[in-house]
Image (cartoon, rainbow, N blue to C red; front, top):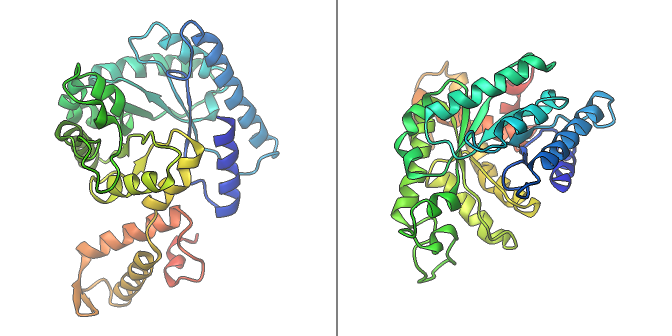
Length: 319
């Protein structure tokens, strides 16, 4: 966790923007029986970072989240009480795992908001939820429509385990390119269906779809290829990492290529000059439908520090 936070500070300073979140884990990160002590450790780490920012020791803007236990776990309310105590102002969002229904979100919101009312934080906390079961996939529309949900993530390994052996272990991994291995997470029909349902529900309700982890963290080429498939084939706009070494390959996959940025800049600048009327660029017709797409490319490029100051489209993102 400390290494990830340090890398976030370093990359924010280098790029001039915070380009990834760090989530401190109270669920899988805590040993059985040590949930309370682990939650205090997570809270202290977040509070220390907040203090460094407030005292100007660290000048970068941090995006730090916390993953709690599921709402039906005995440690859930204890997690909330501890991490929303002194560290309440530190969190950009709260992650709720193993959400099966909108009722789970209502329960989480009730407990979280009660704790926030006792803290010094005045703005509500967005919720990010993890889809990890067949029932959750069945309830996706209601979950995605919930007003407090900001993002939906896919919990691959729990999802596979929830099928009682009906999905092979190979579906938790990524097959080598050209391999004749059994179905992996990008080819098993039930896994791919769940990913597509999450992506589609998020885009329908204006939420952020976040792809699951890749466990091969010592293979940056595998991570990069998987992240590109998550982005280009399945429509995810974010992806989880489980190790700091995965962060740069994931960012590279989700960041527009320089050629895409240059094309988007040219089209948007030409469109503005034409008063947003249809234009022809290299013999291809563009109108407001494609303008919207290329504007989104520019937005993503700006958010990931890929849009250069000398680019003519940079003017659109200056105050």
